[in-house]
Image 1 (cartoon, rainbow, N blue to C red):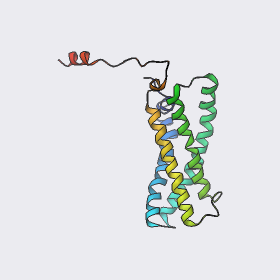
Image 2: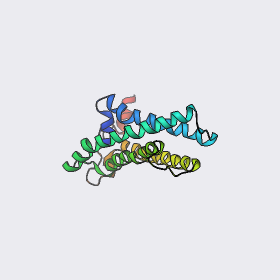
Image 3: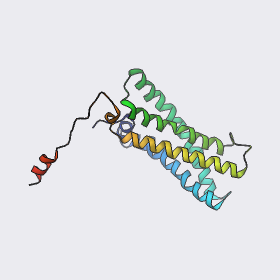
Image 4: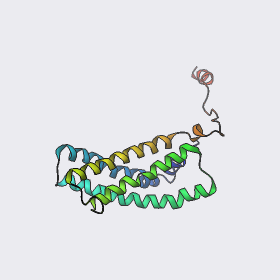
Amino acid sequence: MYMTHYMALLADNQPWNLILFMAIPVVLAETVAVTELFILFSRVRSGPLRAINRAASIVGGLYFSGVFVYLVQHAVLPLTLAGEWRGAADVIAVGAYLAGVVPLLGLALLDLGVIGRGLTEDGRLRRHAVFVAIFLVVAHVAMIFGMLDPRLLMASEPIVQEEMDMSTMHHHQH
C-alpha cells in the first residue's frame, strides 16, 4: 500500500512508533480537552480535575516538543534534502502533525506561568481553550491527510487499481 510518511511512521516499528508518536501525545491532549470542558462549564479553579488538566498540559507540551525536534531532525530534514516527499497530502499531514507543537507547547508554557501571567482567570481559561481547539484542528487535519493515498494529490503518479474489479469479485462469489 502506498502511504504518506505520516502513516508509514505510525505503521513502522509496531507498536512503539504508534505509542510514541500517536498514543502518548493524543492521550495527553485528549485528557486536556476532556478536563477542559468540565473546567469551563463548572469553573473549577482548583482540585484534582484542574491538577490533572495542568499536568497533562505541561507533560503533553514538553513531550511533544521533544517529538517535534526528533522528527524534524530525523524525518523532515532528510525527506526534504532527498526530495522524497510524496506530494501535497504527505506535506500537509506531516506539517499539520508537527504544527501541533504550537498549541501543545502554548498550553505547557501557559500552565508553567511562562506566558499569560497578566491574564485574568477567565482570560487564561479562554487562552487555554483556544490552544486546545487549535490542537484538535491541526491533529485532525494531520490524520485526514495522513490516511489519504498521497497519489490522489499528485499530478504525476496515477493510482493503479490494485483491487479486483466488480466483475471479478462477482465471479468469485459463485
